[in-house]
Length: 232
View 1: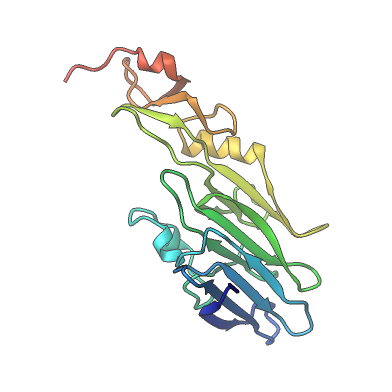
View 2 (view 1 turned 180 degrees about the horizontal axis):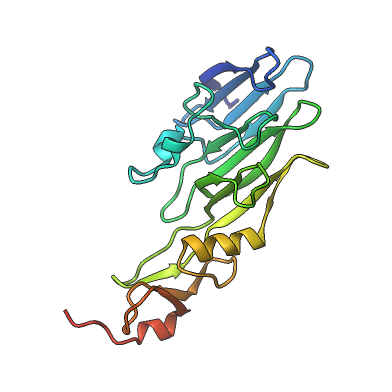
């Protein structure tokens, strides 16, 4: 049986900023609620088509009430599914689309930009939850900060080690988002519980309330489980 596609949202957005709007169409196929195909049409350019088996969600539903991302990052467009955000002046904004998340894992995030020729280019396709857009190194371009995994708790005092990742946006010599180990380390030392490398690890634990008091510490999970517990 042939798959039938139904448009969920269509809109125009002057993405290149030259008075020639790009046309966006998000479609879902039979039996699916969320859109899973995106088509971008820009006059004079080849159609860009992106398929996503996970399906995209309305981006506002991707953030918890206690998160402040959308308060400080307003959508430059009117779409419910595509979040247009500028990371550097003088260049078109990036388009962010968030997928459905499953269980304790973050959602899949797609980021699309316009290359030097004005063609849409997929820059990012990973499990990743947006946390912040901020210029960390003072070069005038915002970095993308987020979580590749969510922390799990197995007591009121222990978390798995799940550091945030920082990606740098570069437009030359080509358009790309690159993971920055130095910026990730610096960010976690300032905003997380410390740094024990870029990988999420269940064999490491964040001890929120060390027996001797003081700030949270990172240690081997088996050692953390044997720490004396505070008396209630």
